Each structure stands twice: as C-alpha cells, then as structure tokens.
Length: 378
Image (cartoon, rainbow, N blue to C red; front, top):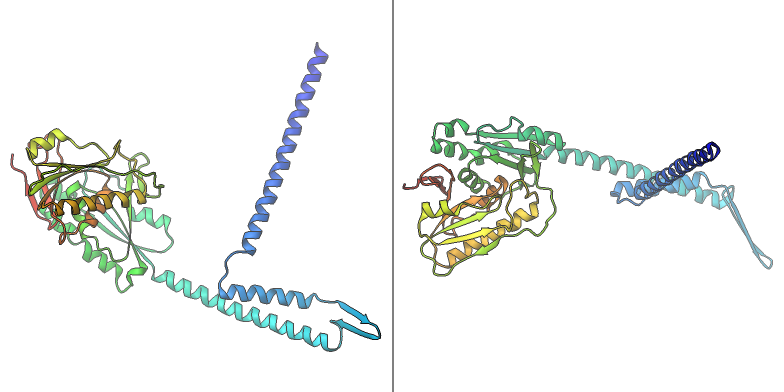
C-alpha cells in the first residue's frame, strides 16, 4: 500500500514537472511568436518619405559594403566575368555605395524635418477643459486634472462654478455666469485655428442649466463630451461601443400650439408630476426601453439619441407646435448634447424644466434658449 502510494506520488510529481516544462515551452513559443510579429509589423509599418528613403538607402549601403562576390559565365569561346573586386564592377559598387549613403543622408534630413514639424504642430494643439459645477456635494476631482493625465498636449481650463448662486436661489446669476462660457473658451483658444483646438466639456448642473449651457457651445472645432462616473468616482469619456440603444417615440395626433416632450434616458420621468404641472397639455415621449443611471457610455449612442431628439423637434415644428415644454431625465453629457443640437431659428421655442419632487408644482421653473428663467404657476 505504501509502495503504491509512493508510486502514485512520484507519477504526480513527474506530471507536474512535465506540465511545467510544457508551460514554459508554450510561453517561449508565445514569446517568440510575439517577437516575430512585432518585428514583422515594424518592418512593414507605414513610413514617412524620409523613413522610406532612410530604409532603402540603408539596405543599399549594407549590401554594397558586404558585397564580395564573383560571377563568371561562358558560351562557346565567349566568356563573361563580373566581380566586385576589380574593373568596372568595382566602380558600379562605389556608385551604388554613394547612392545608398546619399539616400540615407536625404532620408535623415527629411525625417528630422518631419519630426520638427510634428513637434511644432503638437505645440499648436490645445485642449480646453470646460467644467460646469452647480450641484452641492460634488467631488473635488477636476476635469482639468483628469485630462492632463490622459493627454500629452497643452491643456487649459474653463471652470464655471455656480453653486453659490444656486444655494441662494439666484438662478439668473448662475445663468449670467454660464453665459460667459463662449468668451472664456475663445480667450483660451487665442489665435489658434479651430482645427488645433479640442474642447472637452463636462458638467454637474441642474438639467435646465445644462441644456442652456449646451446651446452656448460653438460647434466650431472638435468637442468631446465626458460624464461623471458615479460608480468609479471619476470623469470618464464616452468610449463604449454602439449597442443599438435608441428611443421609442410616442407622437399623438391633434397636437396644439404647446406640447410637453418627456425624455426618459437615465430614469423614467414622473408622469404624475407632469400631469399635476402641465394639466391636459398634449404629451409626446422619447423613452429608452429600460432607462437606468450610469449606463450610457457610448458616443455613437449619444449622437443617435440626439439626432432622434432633433428629428422629433422638427416633426413638432412641422405639426404647428410653437412651444415645447421639455422634461428631461438623462445623463448630463446627453443633456449638453441635446442643447447643442437645438436650433432656435428653425425649431419651436423650448423651455427646459427642473424637477423637484417635493415642490408644488413638481416642475417649478424652467430656462428657455435665451437664458430666461420661467416660473411655473402653482
């Protein structure tokens, strides 16, 4: 019994050693394949003009310096000899060597010039972080600090904090402060071309102020939307894939001059609160199938949802609607994008409402596209 146990133990140890050896063999094999793949990718990578000349010139130079060969052939009484050691072939070798060195020199000059030009272009690049703060208890982690870690170009900051205004109930003061945003962005941009400036915007504000701030953002240049990830406690880009999430629309017939447009993206809007505030005003809805907070992290999805919002406003305008009472339950980045997409010249007038559960009525005030505060009658 003990002998059989020892035999079983020895066999198990051998099996472990064999598996360990095979594991090391596989790891070496994977390491070799990875190295070969990296080398092949480096050799076949797309090069600049200077890089191509440098590569070709280097190959010619190495071939001519290492050449030491002789080729002879005869046909009947005629014979032919070609070698690198004497006569005309030596001259050709020297010519090839000079050509290779010349290509190396020209390629190096072009490559350095390209790198200098890239450095100058990078020096012109600018990222402007636009952070909007208006909710109490928000984190002290600034958007500018998060961007500075992720990007290796010059970063400047526009920080608009309206919490003091909102604590005192001075909504108009907060709106005036937000109204300075376009001018502050232009100041940060300076004389740079719009193509050299990227604006990264994120905000923690009441929904009406977010919508108004979005309407102030100039589409000139490249704008990146970010949002606050509540589960991770940090600013986060919308880097997720498009999973096909879209709004379901409800557009009744027989609309009047005014309608309520209720959008459910992060929560289901409070329909009882809508009824108690707006009475019998016709209700139009845009709703995700299962709206939940902290789930929409795809820029493509946000763009598609904003386009649906835009198309709905166009339909309402075509139906003779003149005023849209907008009720939004959506992530801050999506609210900003809705504001950006709104065109006051070609769409019905819009009033974006603030939801306060214990207020009477539950939607006590709104902000229109001109930045005017509208109080709701109790």
